[in-house]
Length: 393
Picture (cartoon, rainbow, N blue to C red):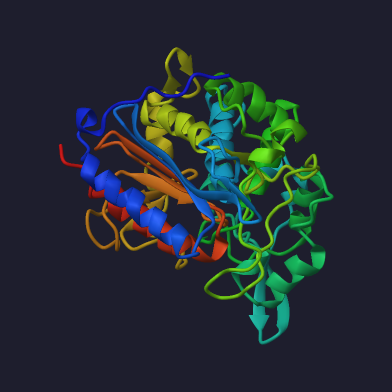
């Protein structure tokens, strides 16, 4: 088994133990009041873990406590991993950010953009190609089927672009046949861009996405439980959600990760533990290296974690004071956002409630793992507020 990151007393890395206790009490309280089944939280500073605790139960149908090594569905926390994979190919000279993706995925050579008149969808030609940079920063013009109710979003649903019994190649071909929601490069729209990026990794590497990630990122970093499914011997560690959201009453359905994945979604298909993801964040914080293992160069990490939107308009998913880099939301202002942080910090989260951030200025990384889709926005901010309250030196 892979050695965990080194541990430290909070005070030794400039964190307040009483403040971290308040974080633990807050999560314990939310579990006790039935808002979430359980959670695992991890906070590291200067490369050492100062807080790593489990709360509640792994499965609401089972009284056994949540283990520290519980396996969570990462959903969109898959995106940064796949983004790193693409940048590894860039560092090998296999692609440029400015390359049109049709150079490698010819199905995207003829692009149309949707135009709407009520429920009628018309088309115009795309002004330019989708580039690799567009996929990484979500300016491709693609969308997600759940991001609206236009005729195009309905066309995504009718085409079943989210179906699990398809290959990455088949999904890319389906997306290429559909029109774009926006002209490429003109609007930040959260989308299936990283699914297409995962297909691009397959084409350039000659491997399945899962094989490439396992060989080039997961095994080198010791991310032992990260993958697109959970092997049978480890399925007893899968964290589960309440069958219904305790506040809205809406039924909760999560990805079935017990069966071998056919569709290896680069945008949202992976699972992992808090410690697994902490190792990935440690690599990012250290400029692309984890001990003697180097995945990317320092300047490549700097490029990925800088803003790539400039004046490009964005949807409401980006918080105030933030732009977007190559796989992450990036903080541009000390204020504006309704939560603390540092300029230059970067983050993302997953649909079931997982979240992370990296703060290079404070040499701080943090991961929260929950499986509560309806509660995710609350816990992302609560966790950030209480972790930053612990920074004292």
